[in-house]
Image 1 (cartoon, rainbow, N blue to C red):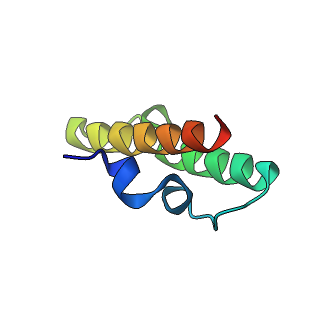
Image 2 (cartoon, helix red, strand yellow; image 1 turned 60 degrees about the vertical axis):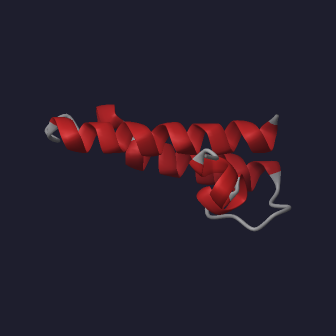
Length: 68
C-alpha cells in the first residue's frame, strides 16, 4: 500500500499546480498548516484531533517532498 502523499501527489495535497514558485509553496503550506494544526482546535474531540493531526502530517510530508 502506498502512502496517501504518494497516491495524491504533494502538489495536489497543497492545492498547487506543479512548478509553483517556492513562495507559493510556502504560502500554501502555512495557510493549510494553520487551518489543520491540532493545537489550533483545543475544543475538538479526540477523534477530530486525530483526524486533524493526520491531515497536518500529510501536509507536512507533501511540503517536505516539494522543498527537499
